[in-house]
Length: 138
Image (cartoon, rainbow, N blue to C red; front, side, top):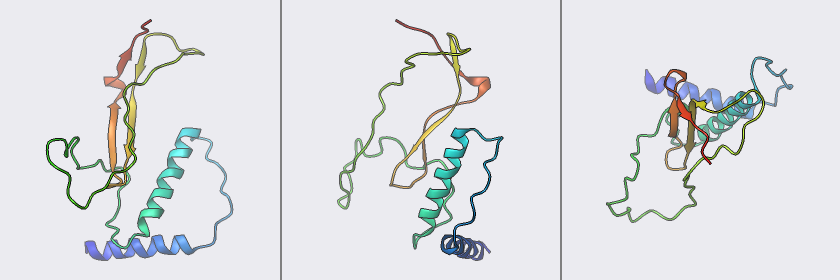
């Protein structure tokens, strides 16, 4: 049954990609700009990956199974090449305004994707109940 579902999903996505653009739908007033950007990015990535011949039912919410630093002590396979990367060293709160004040309780998720498997690489993930408290340091 899984293969049938996957084939049906591929047909549906292919049909949607060929369909003429629908008239612009009204913006959902309950969504903020960040949520709208997230939804658009998700839709674009899903459409891109659905066109691949070896598409295996991409799940936008899935975290990567590739461990960090997996090639640190082991040599890279022969069929690899160098790619552009980004390395995050620090995140700085440059200033706060409005009703915000120190200390800041930070929560949410920060994740990036790479071209190795397109799954989420989670950098930061805290719930509101388990937030990280940032203090002002000079």
